[in-house]
Amino acid sequence: MNDIEANAAGGEPAGPGAAGYTLWQLVRYMLGLGTWGFGGPVALVGYMYRDLVERRGWISESDYKEGMALAQLMPGPLAAQLAIYLGYVHYRIRGATLVGLSFVLPSFFMVVAIGAVYVAYGGIAWMQAVFYGVGAAVIGIIALSAYKLTTKNIGKDKLLWAIFLASAAVTVITQSEIVWVFLGAGVLVWLWRAPPRFGPGVHGIAVPLAAWFSLEAIDWHKLGQIGAYFAYAGSFVFGSGLAIVPFLYGGVVKEYGWLTDRQFVDAVAVAMITPGPVVITTGFIGFLVAGFWGAVVAALGTFVPCYLFTILPAPYFKKHGKRPAIVAFVDGVTAAAIGAITGAVIVIGQRSITDWVTAAMALATVAILWRFKKIPEPAIVLAAAFIGLAVKSFGPHA
Image 1 (cartoon, helix red, strand yellow):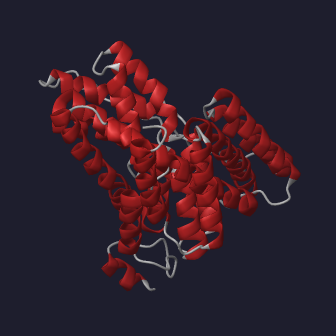
Image 2 (image 1 turned 135 degrees about the horizontal axis):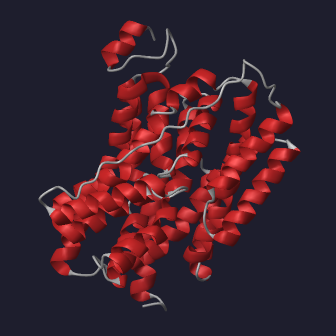
């Protein structure tokens, strides 16, 4: 594909022949992933690797690893930041913006619609039954994704394996993803493989500092509170989308009293059973607090920081990403990130695998996807949802 074709397709590639796909092809893919991509951040980053790196070859292994490293180091939702970075790789700001919007908007509109039904009829007991089945299937999907990421990226490197295992253990024990583990892993591999030579040739990585304006001056006081709070949450919470949940609980339930405990649990359930990034639960929360515009402001407050924290340092990653020191640093961060993803599978599995039925569904999902590689995950998730409804309605759990 030449530059003229790329420009006609809607974006400017990084260089002649740099992109083997058009911007609109990537936008359509992300729109689809945002519509059917169940499983939260762990599954979503696995889907992107499988589809864009392994199957289609649109994104190189090194670009994907750089995006993973950046997404782990910067605050905000992991999957959304990785998607934004992959849009930036060949189509820069325009690609990052369109890809980010196409990835987030489908699930945003879904949670707004669910929020309207929730407000009109009250409660979402049927969703708990759906997630009973969906959660088990998703564990199988993300476990297989974690296995593929591990075997592809860790290889036989003993240092990376040690980092991987340590990161997985920390994630399981603390039930959170700690940014210092990623930073420490990157520095360790950097110092081991490419120790710095101090002198005039040393280059650093610029880390952007985002200053957020206050929204309190806006006439709509509650919208201002929502915008300011969710911008703060999006700016200072590291790790996957699940990491923001306890942070949000402290704010929307304990500090502001916008939601009851039950409503908050329902909001998390909505995020878990809808496709796309888990942090889209902020849109549902915003809707319950202040209607449609509350959902818009909450979603913007959450995702604008992660967008800025991705595109501002991206040029430095692209410019210096092939230096031996940076490659070593990224390898270390990637090993820690994959370890955290594997640990997250265990943490989420403890919550989703509650009996022999869910255990059987998770194992069956792994077996089916392993044996029949062309079966789409949405079909399995849909079947799991119906099984969950049937078991909860007519089985011993009814």
